[in-house]
Length: 332
Image 1 (cartoon, rainbow, N blue to C red):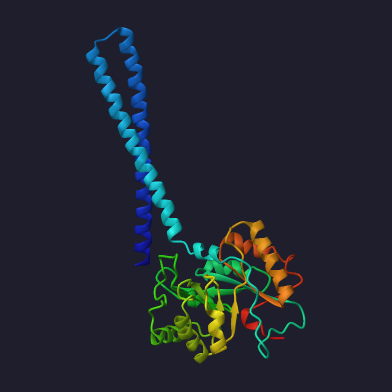
Image 2 (image 1 turned 45 degrees about the vertical axis):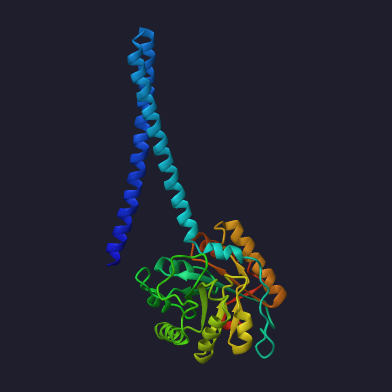
């Protein structure tokens, strides 16, 4: 089934590419035709042909020009549609709206972060779905916390991949404002407590080592206090912690945690909203400075090749912090 969908997508992509090539070929042919007609028109003028002949070729030129203008407009529309599709279906809109550096949430004793030694830094990689991603993560020479998508037809092997990690999280899909391709079984503000409970219970069963979850997208869900209360009530009952990815400045995570008092942390900085090595290193440095100031910090990145390779080669930035798994934050 998956192969059929992949083949279908490839065929659609090839068809679009073919259509685009055909449009450009027709445009080129028409331009050449106009040029040739122009030469012939000049020839007629030089030969002092009749006004009737001249009028005929003038009309031909006008018709060809109209066709070219029409094809150019169609090409522009295709490009515009493609670009709009990229923007509409990208969660990066929410991420960029909340990419500011966020101070860590320091709880009162006994849950205050213990930092008798080096400051602690948690580096979470969201959206982990495929083997090539986990292979790159394992090459990073310090502790990285992968956050795995629940399995779907598009990425069916996440539970299998998680088995090879001693520490991991589940990347829980929640309803978003600016993301219109939600994962299957995304929890929404209309989800009942029982639906949320059944979903979390199922994820615990298929990811037996999970201790923390964090939200995938979720700008709408996390901004809704009643929805977050339902979710945190389930986490409290099932002894789970939550890392708020802070995809919305209006998240109610910290407010609701005052009621349910679960293991709770906030994302402090995104590493790779811009996929550039120098940018990622600067963001990582900011995370280190935040950890030194507050005792700990949480940075979130994504399994882009540039992100994982940059992290692999950034031991120099991390030499003065203790990079730990998220469930080790409150340990000595």
